[in-house]
Image 1 (cartoon, rainbow, N blue to C red):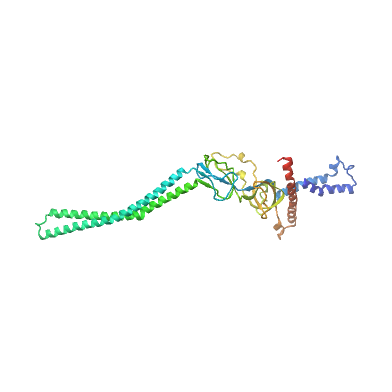
Image 2: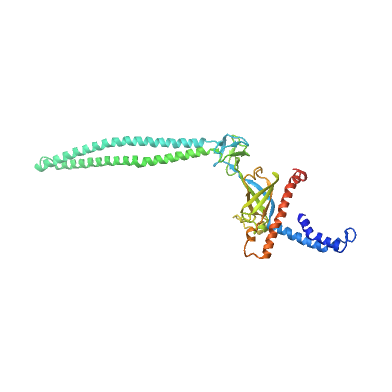
Length: 409
């Protein structure tokens, strides 16, 4: 309607002035309800054409949408594993700091695993003490084996020397028996030395490795026990939290609640028409008015324009996708943030808004090689943005009335 009124001042009104003051025709006589179309046909036709062109230019170069939401971030409260709730530490709508415990799952299994791992560490430490004692006794066994070996060797050497002096004094079989005894004592001595080396290797390498593995299992058991206490990942307010002791929580099926962070506001997410994909660019100046903060125009800036339209996404399934299933018209998603700090305060998170984005041709107008028709066209494009800004302000004035009176909310 505003565009039609503006265009009528440039078309219908001059046509009427010509009819009135040049041709002398007056309203109510020569120009009446039945002859108005014939008398003002040029102005009415030009007004319709100009209005349609103006509306097309305004809504194309200065996009507008009511699909705008003040989005905010939420964090799902859920454990890493399924379990039965043993204790709840917070209530609904309670503010919690980061790291605060929210609830605890039954941890009897985890505590048993932790105690088993702790006992395994103690067992390996005891094995280390026993191995050190065995190492000390191994030195005594080696000394004893060496003594037995030297004694047998001395007896063998004595008998051999006597046999060399007089073969009839010592029997050959006795010398062979002593040689076997010496070899046996030498083997016992080597076994004692090898046993000591085995104990040293066990103390130096095997037992420390087993202890490290046991300590790792102990740490893992402690981590699993700590997971039974679910904590707040960030400071915020607990919402939709109705857990009670005895409830079963499953991360795949049922979450425990939602945590709304304190620093939750991201900005505005707006869905513009697909036809405006060539116009919407990051860095465009925008304005918004939100139902949660009436009678207020918030200067915004387009920070990002999503380069895909969500309605056309296809996920792999076991069935072929029919193009008819993707026929729903999607929107071009754009992210808007306040142009000045603090101007977005007071807007409730999740509030519905109306937003305009404005095309700016400032750099193109100052190009040295721009032609006059192009320069004039760009000036017109920038000028008609004022009409859209006026429409947004009228919407800001009428939005509370429409909500409270006509919709009855």
